[in-house]
Amino acid sequence: MKKYKFILSGGGTGGHIYPAIAIANELKLRLTDAEILFVGAQDKMEMQKVPQAGYKIEGLRIAGLQRKLTFQNLLFPFKLLSSLWKSRKIIKNFQPDAVIGTGGFASGPLLQVANSCNIPTVIQEQNSYPGITNKLLSKKANAICVAYENLERFFPKEKIVYTGNPVRQDLLDIDSKREEGVTYFKLDADKKTLLVLGGSLGAKRVNQLIEKELDFLLANGIQVIWQCGKLYFEEYQIYNKRINVQVVAFIDRMDLIYAVADFVISRAGASSVSELCLVGKPTIFIPSPNVAEDHQTKNAKAIVDKNGAILLKEIDLEEKFETTFSNLISNENLQNELSLNIKKLAKPNATKDIVEEIIKLIQ
Image (cartoon, rainbow, N blue to C red; front, side):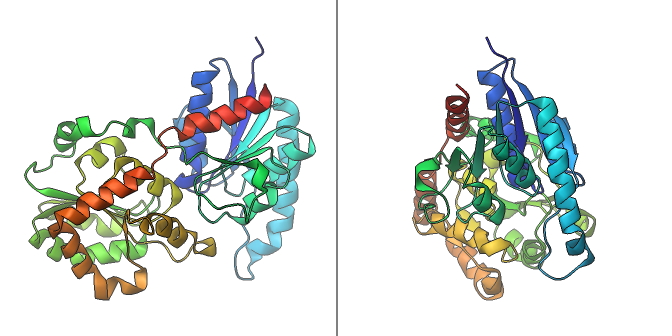
């Protein structure tokens, strides 16, 4: 039997890295002796996260274009050329059967070279509004696995496969883990728990909101697990001194934290949205307005329009947060309705379906 080889590329943020790792894990399950290599951006978080997951990674000297004129932008053409050259070298040495891109700077040059060498390529687009890299790559890609409907205006219709986003498989059965979660996070089993998620790096505006509203939350009998992100941990760890508050940079057991959460306040990055659909907790999305094409607002709206979550824009936080949150925690019908509706949008078999598409291509 042929031993297959795959290159996966995605990075810059957890939202691109974890789907790539999930796909790699599923490929290993399906094709046990498959050889897998990752390609990332030299100085981004994938250079740590991928080896931690047990895979080899090569780095490219690539970075995105800044929105204003900077010295980095002047270096961009040189970095791009060097990345294309190195991608060609990697592909020539490794000889992959297929190349899979999950977004982020490094996937651009790599998939570009794979396309020019007639190697099958698959794009996995997490967002409801694709980034420029994937839009450009889609013209030559063999399949485009998407997580939202109606993306025909960005991608060739005949290549689109509606799979959903890869998510951690340990989230499929969180209902049985509540007790374990209460023990693990040393929580009060009689109190309602609010989980605050700001993404892997953290979300400045969400952190400012929680700091300001902490007394209000505690006065409502809520215990808070506040993932503030590694950029902000120094600043906010002081609140660990408060009773019923835990501030963490990163959460290592997402399955257990989702099992104990009664309410969630979250950014609307694609991976977070997909996970929250799966776990079905009443959620308030606070999208980041500082991302390309405002795609987080679009991600959140796709859920909110189907009555599966509440959307609060950053500009409305001062005025609307307390009434919105009070209404949510006091209204059980609303909680049940949101849970039911967001769960209907889950795609628990996304990773398997994406790998199915990859295997179809190579066989």
